[in-house]
Picture 1 (cartoon, rainbow, N blue to C red):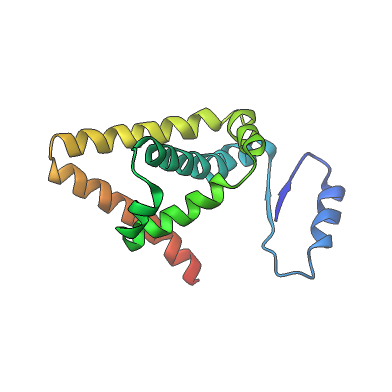
Picture 2: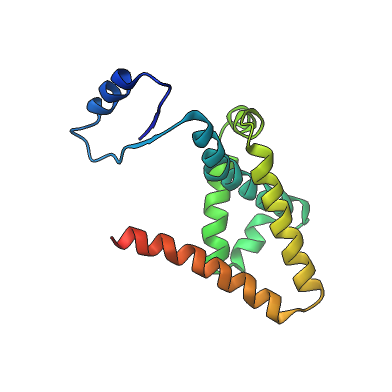
Length: 148
C-alpha cells in the first residue's frame, strides 16, 4: 500500500493505521517520487506489452499459429500481454499520458530496444552478453531482497 505524504503527518498516520492489522506492506513517499516510480512500474510494463501485442498483430501471423510453436517464454509473455489487451484502453491511455514522468520510461524502453537492435544487427556477442549480464545483475538484487 503506497501512502503519499502531502504534509499532513496526522492524516498520514491515520491512513496507515487503517492497514495496520493487514499483511499489506506499507510504503511512504512523496507525490513526485510516486509518479516517477509508477511511470516504470505501470507505464513501462504496460507499454512493453502493448508494443509486444502490436508487433505480433502487425506481423501477419495468426496468434493460434504462433501459440502452437511457442516456448515457455513466449507463453508467459503472451499471457501477460493478453491480460493487458483485455484492460480498458481509456485507463491505460490515462496511465500513459497523465504521468509527467511517463515519457522518461518510454524513452528508456526505446533506448533499450534500439540498443538491442544495434547489437543484433552488428552480431556483437560481447555487447549482447553485457546486456544479458547487466539484466541478470539488476534482477538478482530483487531476488536477494525477496529472500530476506
